[in-house]
Length: 284
Image (cartoon, rainbow, N blue to C red; front, side, top):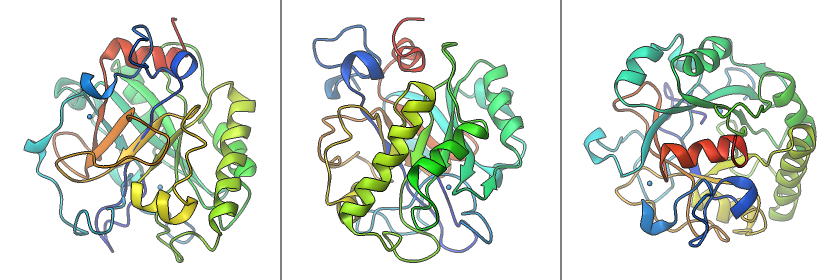
């Protein structure tokens, strides 16, 4: 979600699959849940990591190189934005086919997106299904403290059929050490603290946005969140690649940093009706 566009280029993307009945991701037999099976389908201190999602996976894509928009994978088109995009023309994005948006709300416990209201409400007002995202800073405060900061600054959830559970953007550190100075076990504990507190505050499990490489490096490819948290995978390539352990498929895929829509280009791995199931946590 975060991007130091002016300095390093493109950043990361993550998708997520959610446990069958409660998270909107379908198992092969679960026709009413929100995410299609694989066969069915596709932000710091100082200057806050400057924009939208997406750190390129090392060895997979060269920083600064963007996958052509023509390579859009199959799925329901959507986008993610941050303060980098400023005031977004939501009507144009809708007319061009975007049906969902994730909007950066917060970072650490020190930053809020000054364009959040225009982006979060604007996407909703044109008919999109929208959600907020939080750029994680595990080196500053606890996961629970940052989950509270997110919820207290627009990242909550309501059962209106148009609001997604918020996303935790956990990725390469744009300010220093790749894993924020945490061991793999400490990182797993930090993420658990965040998602558990978010669930306690909202009744929903947050989507996790990441890359397979960062997840392996910094959590030891931990599989323990796959049963509850939808996966939003970031990978700028022609295929989604190998997913982090535990997730058999993804919910969202951030596949390019620019294209048809403002911000990063994403797809939902399923239909609009299934996305509404994830938004509603079941039928609305």
